[in-house]
Image 1 (cartoon, rainbow, N blue to C red):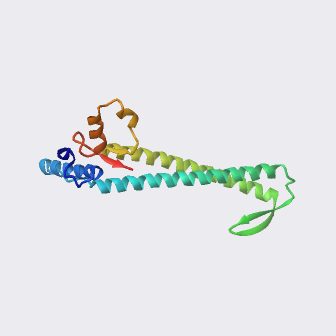
Image 2 (cartoon, rainbow, N blue to C red):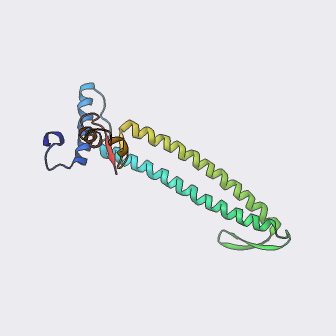
Image 3 (cartoon, rainbow, N blue to C red):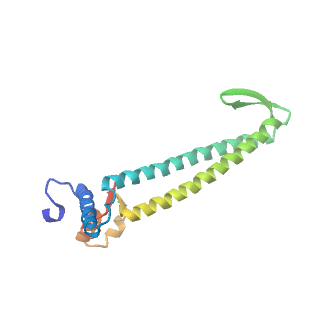
Length: 175
């Protein structure tokens, strides 16, 4: 078993990173190409990209909640006399207005927020495609991913595919 994984003091997950970096170095010296990023750099970039996508999703969810609040207020104000006074919070200051002044502004804000959400959703889709391409390029697998597929394989071949083994050499496992 030590011949497969290297020195006994080395953890198998660290071996996957080392085998990918040594595999890229040997390929680069034979082919004359520049070596790619290290496994740590690949993982860090992948994690950063995932965090960007998560923050976009979080912002979109936050704006969706704002749209729901705007809709609730708009629906309430539509049933009220337009000359009735109401209060609106503008930049931390409560301002007295009439319903007929506030209602168009709220509807305009709701439209603008909807456009921003659409923009964020398209950016999230683009980031998702970029993330998928990056995963395929560097053969990144997430922990727990593909466990159903590995059940049909023999134990040795599933060990090779999960540990970055002898087949690919450039695989990176991300927890």
